[in-house]
Image (cartoon, rainbow, N blue to C red; front, side):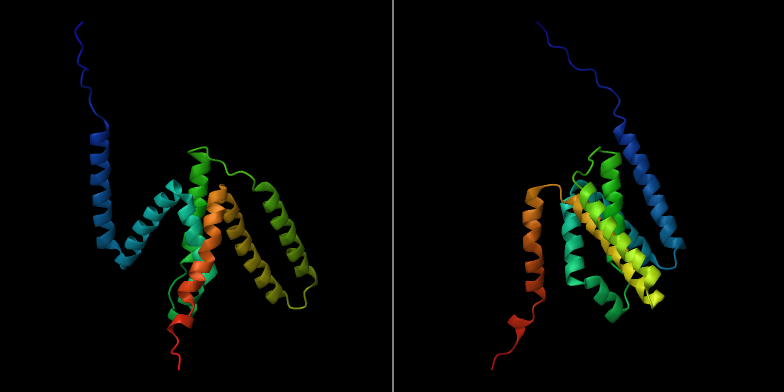
Length: 189
């Protein structure tokens, strides 16, 4: 019996990727020539790359989020060097990656409802303190800071879906602290 050769069909991926590459190149060239600060374009491209990496490997976004939160790198960059926040864009990237994984890939986080309820209840108690605060602006700042931390905590809960990720994560803060500990660099004498 004679084997049939498959009929070669037209590959649609090649022209689609070629068109996307041309459109992307023209768009980047236009943005580089029109933007006053091309560094923003580079940061935008790096942000998109980070988004794709976090969509594919959400643990990496979790590790980076924990590292930046634990070491307070973003706060030091803002206060000491006048640089923009690194943590806020990362939180947006992680949140968008969670949403994309949930909607597009149907990878719904599990086990987040009860912790989110507890965090929400605690937040309501903090919000109620605004009604009785002597210094309203100070209490309001504390509630806003709690809300930011609550969002980060819920994102961490969303991303901690495997026990292995939790075990790996438990070693990260100690390693981060070891990197920042000045004790090995002290001159003994």
